[in-house]
Image (spheres, rainbow, N blue to C red):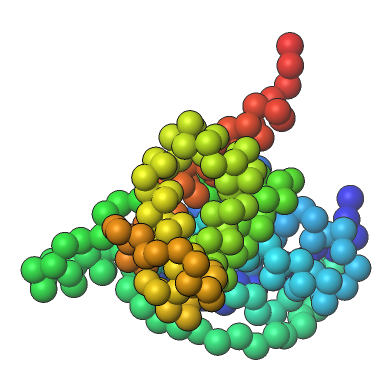
Length: 252
């Protein structure tokens, strides 16, 4: 039994904190309310020696969680970490404070109400079902952890989308395999790479600075590329989570 428990304050908007508090504690990671604030807890925190180590691990863990949540909720605003609380065995509470900045924006429901009032289309509901299983998979899978960490912290420009896509494509076995698995079509893959790699089309944000290849005849827009990649990411994560769950299931 641990002599103390570590909890890390989560700094963000109420809508996101409420989503995090829906986490299944069985995953080994959970968020809960304490003294009117939201705190992140993890089994691994209680094995760490001091507040600095706990905070650093919480930052890395939140990058993964932010990436998974951002995939599910298009209006997700990254949640940061604040104070680190140590609850000692004698009941005393020790606090180490790390200031963070807050941001405000609308929840999905509020956004859709505003869009409806303006006569504009609502944000479609997410097809992502389980954030917990993605985070659990990331803890033991370096590729998943890397992609979710990037997805949660980068701006999703052409270079970053290409980097994340290459990690996924390599993980599944290459260009032919990613098409065979139905993650994307060869045509859409060609549109993406033919756009992302070409400076003539996307300028300074292109992956390459040379002009060796002619522009793709049907290039993607950056918004199309982001939506295309998000669908691939979701399919890949669900597949990885399913494999992880199967490997951990007890045999009879």
